[in-house]
Figure (spheres, rainbow, N blue to C red):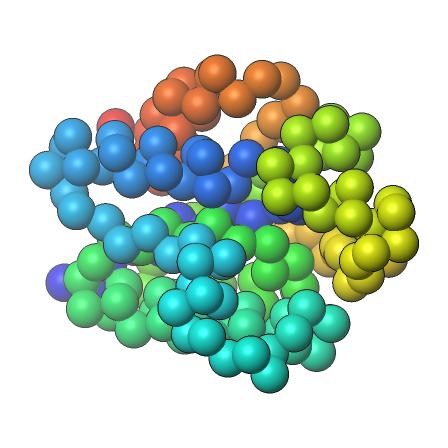
Length: 173
């Protein structure tokens, strides 16, 4: 049996990880134990200190996440991925190679993202202490044909509804 990959992508602070965790919880309540691959946690687990955040290394890391998700999905797991990975080549590779792929683009206005900024990335960029930030000095390649677009400019207190909406759109509810 082939699994499924639910790929959540968007800029930093768009709500990817928060929504992915709720999707994971809802799937568990349905009796499905999914694998959640969060981009930041994946980087930490791989611990390749030579893999930076410049465009070339971002693509390398995105392919690592894609290939790992593909391996897990081909073993029958439902995989939830929460990562920026804003490259058309990654989205195209995913569509060609995953057994069952559902892409969710979570978008929010840059001013909202800067207000949320849980990791301080936008603040560090603005003060000159960071670089290679998609949406700032790196131009993101947003998905061309996502299966679902979520406008997440509101508060993240609607996360349960958003997660349920994603699961209904990809056939779980």
